[in-house]
Amino acid sequence: MRIRIAGTEFSIKNKSFEIYVQGCNRACSGCHNPEAQPFDGGKAVDIHEFLKEQYERTSLFQDMVQNIYVSGGDLLCQTRSIAEEFSREVNNFWSDKYKWLFTGCKTEDLPDWVWDYYDIVKTGTYMAGLRQEGVFPASSNQELIFNSNPTAFVADGILDKFDKTEFKGNKRWSDVRTKV
Image 1: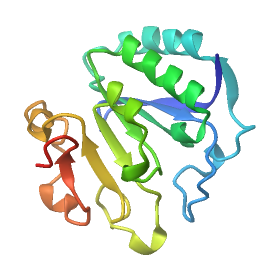
Image 2: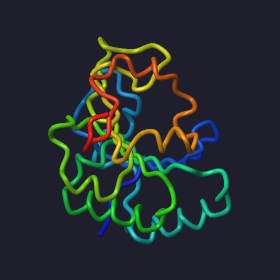
Image 3: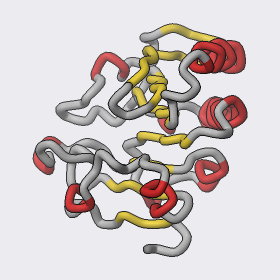
Image 4: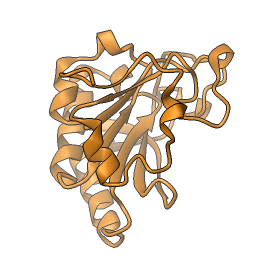
């Protein structure tokens, strides 16, 4: 199965390896990655082979990488079969890392299968009129949803860069199952 990829990068600041999927139909004004919106952009790759190559690449920096970010574009704007296969492969290759999905999908519209593969999901389209200066997520309508108790992420230092006040604009900073 194939997917289009806009690019990848390492982030020392976020202790992450970031994969940018090509294609998004949400058309957010002020989009962070407008070049990743066209579905015909980027490079078409075989999902398994591409992720295998990226896994081998990241293994050189095993101690640095704690997080795998899937961003874009938007993975959930791809066909379900492609999005789910990509997510399954990401989870298989990086089973020992925190997997993040960045999507413009509304929280209530997330497909159930997402929770089989991701630890943290950022939901909601970017809205320039609701921009939060210097905080994450970038606009106050967006939410961070945790697939397990967020205290585990705090204990592992994953959320060290955030002050809890940075989450004040969100409707929830929660565990999807227990609503902390």
